[in-house]
Image (cartoon, rainbow, N blue to C red; front, top):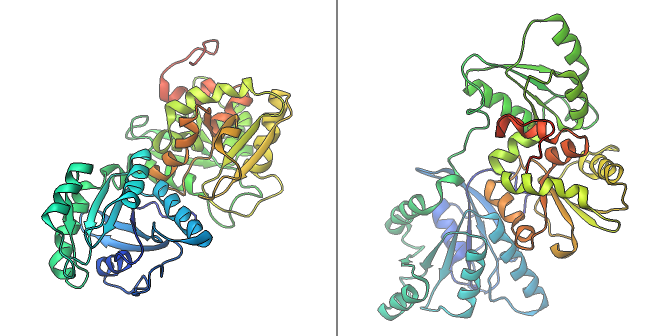
Length: 410
């Protein structure tokens, strides 16, 4: 699996072995994407494929191994299939031969746990049509209708299936909200502080910076882009007063010192947190940094895999700042992409999520689901950095209105 780099709606295909999951994907994409065989268990690992669906645009279909796999290796495959549920915006539960019992109920329970809407599809309907008893039983048990489908007649079934997907996939999965439209307006000048250091990608900007620039252009604003060491001279030599300043979180302290207090200041990470993350939970969780104790374990969640630099923000700088701020001996785990956690979530005292520019909103929300369910405080890279540097209130102020420096935020 890739590390969630596609920010398109993700649709997961689930069900038992040899139920026609791979055939469904091939019929929908009109390509031989997934291996189709009469041998149960042909699909072993989740397989992703992009496809264009009219009315939704590009989506990602994910084929998974059978939920009824057997043996120790089979259980590993099942675990991988269940893990995909956290990554999708919508699920298709593929059944056949009028079968519907514990395997299907297990999947539906997982769908409901992670708030994933789903469609029940009866595959191979040309070979074993869904009976009225089956259709009524499913509706009474789940409250859901059943879509009857045959992969050998895609021209007959695909139009109605695509129409159903367009109707039921949450619009939040493909209607992207803006980043700054409620903070800026036509003609505003926004200053972006973008360090070019060892962690900056060669010859380009990082994705959050690119996204903010595009959003400012969409809002008919002027973006001024400077490295952190150029800010003081720029403000001194010009009469330009930006409507807003957005900085890389790593230089928050320098930006706070350089930007006059009357000019709102925040970070790229916090801007993304409001659009994609659980902003209110971050606001509540961030001050818990001050309550960490010796021996507490902190989980840092990156949304991408990248080369680790000697002064990496998530693996080096944030742990150093947290330890210095708290004065406590803390333990740290860092997880990249959508990888499995190295230990149970209950063992962590705090979770710190990056901006999440490389994953979908649903993937980020479900990634934090277990921490919230276990009442473990969560925060965001930018908010955590601002807090340990004593500028948390100022960093979130643009999104909350005027807050006195001496007021408690929460």
